[in-house]
Image (tube, rainbow, N blue to C red):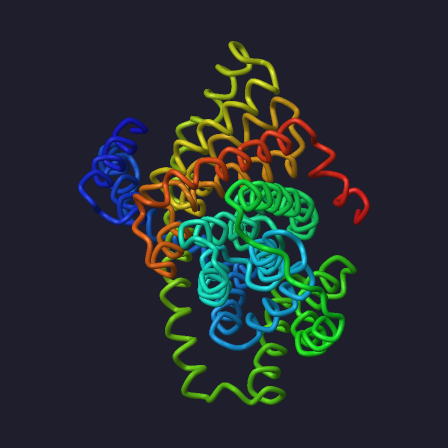
Length: 424
């Protein structure tokens, strides 16, 4: 039954069937092949999967991210970041990374981050003499921070898949996200010095104050979201709703820059992402259920505990599997496929669930920049008007330092667990 599931799934992928429908088709064919289960079980499992209050946070955050990316809220954050770090060599590249960190704390989406930050920063970087390929690479690699900095949608999905507390996962993702940001800044600085680009700009306190005042209300958004969650004032779903209402208040009432017609367009764009993600989650429920009834996680756990009972080796295996999978599936899809398989093994080997989750998410996040399915890479390519083949070579040093950051997360658990322990 499991062999049929995976054969049909991968055969469908090779036939260019969308991932979610390949997953559903594999599950249906496997169940029909088994013959002892009713076909209606697929629909029942899919409906049960999305009938979840915590998952309601995902569509709310997606709508919120669309609103921020289409309004001046993101532009105000970018301007503040430029004022903060523009005086360093390669200042606009560092501002690009900082903007991704701030934006990741608002939208929870790497692709929304790429669009919002890249549409502002890439033209400015090219205007200041930065090469188009370098501008695109900094933008797409820094956008992966959105997969880790709360309120990450992938963190919410992992929490739902494993029954982990979302607030603890949010706390666990902060420092690894910052580690990735610092790693990209280091590589950006080294590249700017090597190529003689990114001259320093004079620091102006007046500009910093002006941009701080302009971005002040926007900076309240991550404080509201994370502060409310970590203090226990409201749940993740409630924080998403509050952030959406506050963001709508800023754009509609305070800044008066969005009409109701524009808000409807935002909802239309968000519905496309919401539909694809929720359908994928529903399909994943059936996939995980079939794996469970066929005892795949249990049997695989027993096999690995017998032949590879070493946490460091398993950590390396997680990274390698995630990097290979990320070349063909989006991080969210790969997360849904791999978690039901790897989670029981990691728990049996003594991993902390937060450490395992952040390690898996960090490694899978690199799939955003690895072809042929690197979404942020393709978005940055379009924004910079640079063909993908011209981005591969300059991507390699940045990908290498991202892998180093993943290894740090894997072998220094304190990077992940310190903040959750403090919050706890």
